[in-house]
Amino acid sequence: MLSSTSPTGKSGRPSTNRSLVLARAVRIGAVVLLAAAPAMAGGQDAAALRRPPVPGFAAIIGVVDDSLRGGPLAGATVVLVGSLKSAPTNRDGVFRLDSVPQGTAQLVVRHPLLDTLGVTLTSSVIPVGADKIEEIGFATPALSRVREVICPRGGAVTGSAMLAGRVDGADDGKPVAGALVSLVYTDPASGTALQRVRNARSREDGLYVICGLPETYSGTVQAAVGANATSEFTVQPKAADLTTASFLMGSAVKSDSGVRGSALLLGRVTDVAGRPLRDVQVAIEGGTAIALTGEDGRFSLGDLPSGTTNAVVRKIGFAPAYRTVHLRKDDPQTISVALAAGIRALAPVTITANADAGLKKIGFTERRMMGVRSNFLSPEDIAKHQAGRFTDLFRMMNGFRVVNSGLGSVIESTRGGGGLGGQSGCVNIFVDRVAFHQMSAGDLDTAFPVHTIGAVEAYASATDTPGEFRMVGKSCATIVAWSKMRLSKP
Image 1 (cartoon, helix red, strand yellow):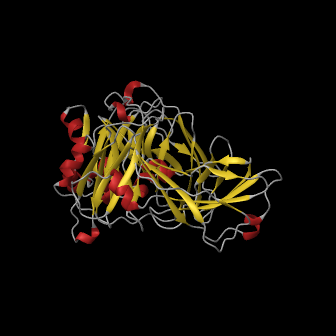
Image 2: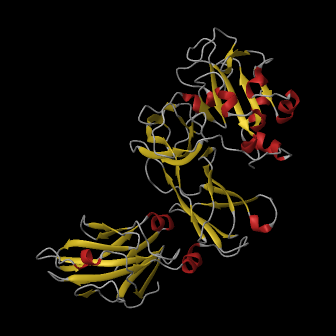
Image 3: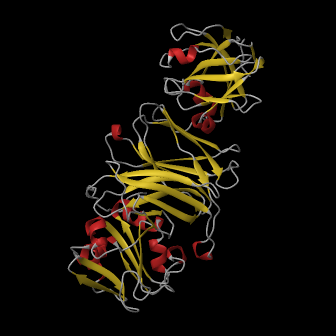
């Protein structure tokens, strides 16, 4: 334990233009640092800071500096220990806490970044007098000090950047120890497109850290406990050497068990001008439910499994949007999405030997070897078709037919009558493990140009469909398509 004397606050009329001698207390695991730190930035309205306290009470003003990333710590909550009183920090890290009883006070700073790193930021106990304004400030530990404490000695080192985060249970909130966190990344500054993999295990307190990363890396990260895994999501450092990514691990429930989750995702979808969009499809990766937005652009997607996953928002004529969401039971999550007009242009993706690894990772290879009554199109098979549109791949496929209209083409099952909305001849569709609904003829060809498709699985009946792709209450044939972009990920 490292410590030094921590001064108390100073009473009197505050000024945003002079330096203050302020207390700093930082706990990183079992290490406690106490030091003097001068800080008080401008930016808070001077009149608001100088207003007198409530008669008979004190006020505390101060600033919280972010030494981890540089600059003020905005969006933190400063809490008066032993009470329900709290105050937020503004964009300059400045706060004012009012109606503090006279006597003594101690403050603690809460912030997602500090929670992620397991850092506790507290002040010393300071005297507060009635009708007085006390001044205090905080500074987080420097990144070099955090790195010294939480980074393991040795290991791969290609730079000074680090990725850290927490793995917690989605429903009980308890730390998950031993989770495997995998980072797949490239380093543009290295001059090669070679993908590298770094792994870390979460500690007893749920913290994991991957140190010694290049400053310019970008990639995807995922957490797993056995066969139970979260979705992958993108990480890319910005200005600082510290990037955080945390996960919620849900319960491992078999997709065909009939058990639904109790998490709820709410939100609103607009265009970039803020106008609400209707009939936008919202689904989560690995889920089978689809929500459609109403006239006001709002949607509600329920019965979802808990955990960290990706929400996919799609509407024909707009570029799709992806949002990482952390779902908990009985704790609705809300997102706001603005869709940009136009189909996102994808760079050509060439599938090489990595395709075999990609097909194996998504389960395509294993399902094909099981010998069920189904149709499997590998990247080579799709290339041989020389199809002009996605639906053309199914024109000669057993169990399916393509129906043409003036608006475009629709894929139907031959196990009954046609129709987009009925059970007869219906087809459930998943692209990259995300459900998609044919709302009108031509939707599939517009949303998924054939040159972006890398592999296809087609199951002619619900009984042939693997449990993970069955939709409750919708017994249909099933098409599972995989994009080239998805297959290119190791």
